[in-house]
Image 1 (cartoon, rainbow, N blue to C red):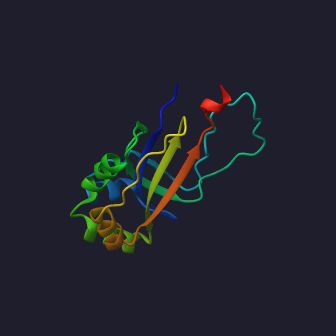
Image 2 (cartoon, rainbow, N blue to C red):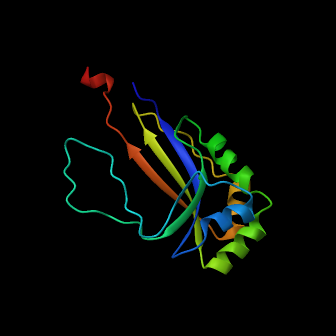
Image 3 (spheres, rainbow, N blue to C red):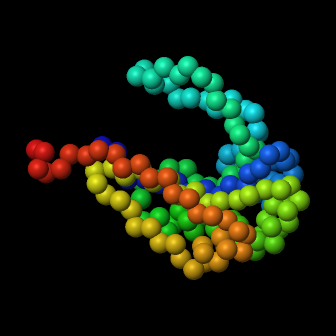
Length: 150
């Protein structure tokens, strides 16, 4: 049985910029990156036939967690913001130099009707505000069997 899980990541993205330079400036290796124009790989699905190839619309540098089983997102959020602390000025300089935008993405997969607690604490709000980052949510509420169905 699958359990509710989530991942959190921070993205710097724009038209075209040197990913390795950004990594060196921030002294962080990205957990994911891609270049504008890269083909988007599709997971194989026997029920779906893909007729069109899609390509990345921007270049992206990301730092974040993998999916982790959780009913409280604070630990995952803290893992990401701790890596970015005291780098706010540098992030702003990188965004200005390479004409980039940034955001945090919180992806949640809910199973068996158990959503996680989501706390956007003051530290997270302060960091997002200082670097002009939006906070996005991507939530998947998967079907589950209730006691009534049994």
